Amino acid sequence: DYFSPKDLPLKGKKVVVTAGPTRERIDPVRFLTNFSSGKMGYAMAEAASDLGAATILISGPVSINPPSNVKLISVESAKEMYEAVVEQFDNASIVIKTAAVADYKPKEVHDRKMKKQPGEATIVLERTTDILAALGERKTTQLLIGFAAETNDVTHYAKGKLEKKNADYIVANDVTEAGSGFGTDTNSVTLVGKNDVEIHFAHLPKKELAIQLLQTIMKLETAESK
Ligand code: CTP
Ligand code: CA
Image (cartoon, rainbow, N blue to C red; front, top):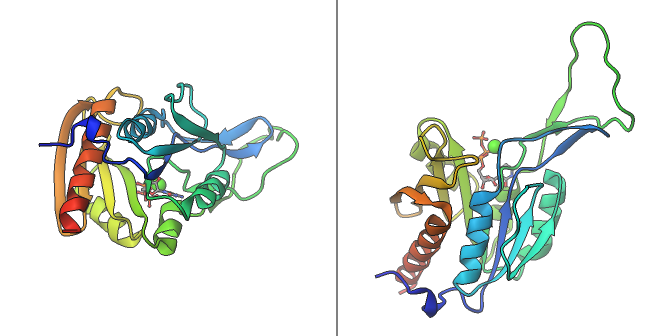
């Protein structure tokens, strides 16, 4: 008894989705990044739009095309993503942080290409802003949904992140499972929420999973507000 898409449960709502990796520059020709393909985030944005939301997709550099009917804002670094999300935050109903944001960036960005030297080299890193945690501090009525890729103790870490970042839901992903995680077209996740919500979704195409996640969350929220 899910909402049928024609019920458009997100109609009238503004949904902001972040997706893809971030790029943290070292010098003009080099950067740090991760394996995020953007597929899950793009699927979440498409699903939000299909369910009736006015959808804004804030994306790091990826090689896939954005869904139609969403507004794409392209960013590069964690800092740029943070600034773009904050700008969209106040009148958003739901913010979905699918992006794989770099946790560290080079402390120094060289404006000329670094030349090799004999022996070892070191790049000193400093932390980026935790965007989800910053939104968790700032939120008023917004529903905050985070994602977490883990290799072990998946729901344990997801519950920790839920609390620590003041999110409403964390979608936890075991990236060691076959057909799950970075670059794949299918995914298996556990949705973790307040009140001990813990729902597993197994081996679904990312688009189908995105629809089911949003429908499940809307149902849980409707039940809660009754
Ligand atoms: N996140 C974020 N800003 C960061 C790092 C993470 O907004 N600088 C968000 C991600 O978009 C995701 C959630 O936080 O929705 C969880 O990301 P994850 O990397 O799993 O959590 P971390 O807190 O960074 O913990 P760790 O990488 O150490 O597991
Ligand atoms: Ca991280």
